[in-house]
Image (cartoon, rainbow over all chains, first blue to last red; front, side, top):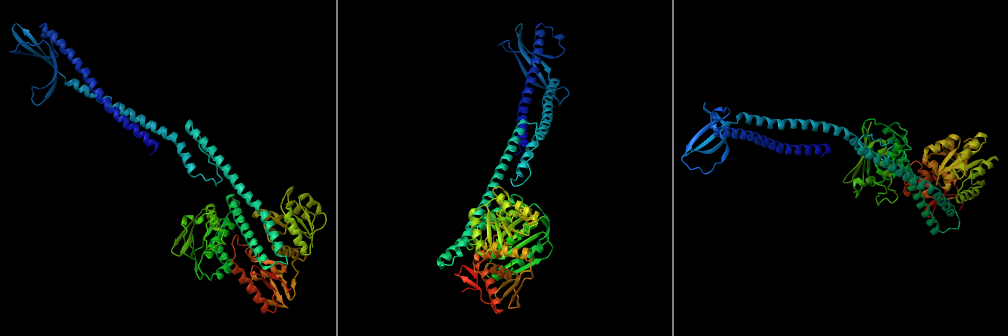
Length: 414
Length: 225
């Protein structure tokens, strides 16, 4: 629930509650005050009657009954009563004062009544006023308050939206709005500081990875050179040659991993920012030609269906690396005498290949160093490079597998 | 050939020195930029140049060589492998760019190709017994008869002859052949297939069988028994 809705609901439900009680209270209070006024009037009438001067009364009717009882008390009683009017169907409300009086040996009951209809109407009107005006008043207050809160919150929502789209990998700054609300201003200051810190840390981490990889190159070069020197010696036996060759192979692998990591670091550092219009069709054709020896080696059948031209704006060297990695992946994880199917439309590229049943979860496909145990030579980093390139070049990539068919679907934003 | 090795890592410099000396070159080693700039006042045929030197950027050497109009070939050997670095080096006038780590055999092959380009204007033919190779025309002749080789096989043959009498591991050969395929581990079968085809074609055209298998881990191109 939005903050605005939440506070609005609280405000409204509290208002309804208090108005209900407030107007009820108001109604009873007014009624009490009015009946007090009547009582005073009736008492005044009583006083005048007792002075036997009731001819002067203009505002009340007096009724005198003679009762055959003994006078018990001399108290007087106020009550409300309804009396049918002379004209028939109309009932009217009256306030009535009854008291008993001993005149000679007779007991008289004197009832003074006074119509309360006009004042009831007044009470209703007052109560209505007491209810409607505050309701209107608070409604306006609520709307004004809501608009002003909404305006103040706009900075907050802006901050949230910007944080949502925040990507440590992207170059842009967070650029939060300034606010005249202290709390939001503080919040934005904290976020700005945090953003700076995160970016700095990330930069340092990237720098560290890059430097480490670069620094590793020279020692690896030395190892490789020395091993090469060793293996050229004439007096080595078979075991020794095999050991050294094994070491050379391992060193090569180490170097390849390192180079792949350097490449990833370069991707992260946006070394490949330059973009131009390229044709996916021709790059695929070119790469398939380059990879022909490997395709032949696996006895694979390649089917290229390029119905339409797919023109994309991206870095050409990244495009080559991307498509080469995907094709190499399709070749490497294929079965003997399998097939590779490449389908190009004007928005999509699908590379499908036959293969073994995979134990991979599709989500994990693009993680670094995820590899198939059947291919110890693979570094498990190629698809991670593919994913990075796709992220950078604004391409959506999806991996699907269906029993023994694996396919990568690339959606380009042309 | 007179070669200057500019490399600040003594171990690597020593390896390159002994390797190039064994190939019959005369070598000198400079461990830093100032020494290198001092040494190139005398004439060298080739400079093997590292870029990250303790007292500066190795590109200064390229600038000096080119400004003096010396006919000296420069091969940059660097751990920096970004395209910008390569382009910058090559634009300044370096002739080739090799990324560390590298195989000695690879350096050797590049060196020989550079010598042909710089000092023989690419006209030189590589001759090995009855084999005659014209790199500029991708032409191989056995006893004067052309042999039809694929680009890969031709490349492989030139690589083998440049590194004759040396043990070349399958990994090294794979690396040389897969220059364009970053991180692709070529399978041994793949290399084997290409070498087998090359060997078959050469023998069929009447050449001697020079490609020897070394204990199943590599190959050696040699006419010595």
